[in-house]
Image (tube, rainbow, N blue to C red):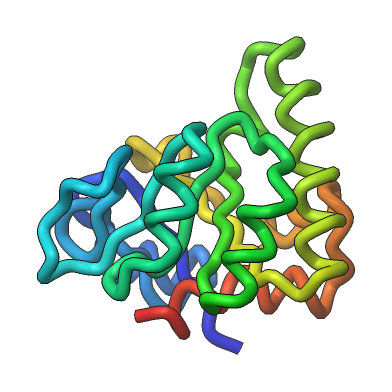
Length: 169
């Protein structure tokens, strides 16, 4: 199975990419852009990150949008239904799930678990990405699979979660 990750770093060399167990690590700005609203370059693939339900709903109808990041992993059933209907991916950010702030991390885990359970039950695609800012925050594919188990994925779905990003490009 081919695994993919998305990072905020400028570039990751091929040797490190393969050592971490990925086929490709995509870079924000180069391969994909993350937008907080619907004002983005129409020539690139886009992931919309927002807590505004209206922005997320409109983003799911855009052709260039491959998926969404719901800030704070808030469970919004209508948005998850729309993501399933439009064949978009809902991204969970691993760096938020492994943050140093204990209180925030516990809240994010709880919300991510609820979001994951509902989305998986209705058939929405869910992917896990690191959005690492530098090499110190990169996680291997095996570490990402373990993190996905904490939100409720079994091993087979954990592998799928790391591959959905590649299928969207």
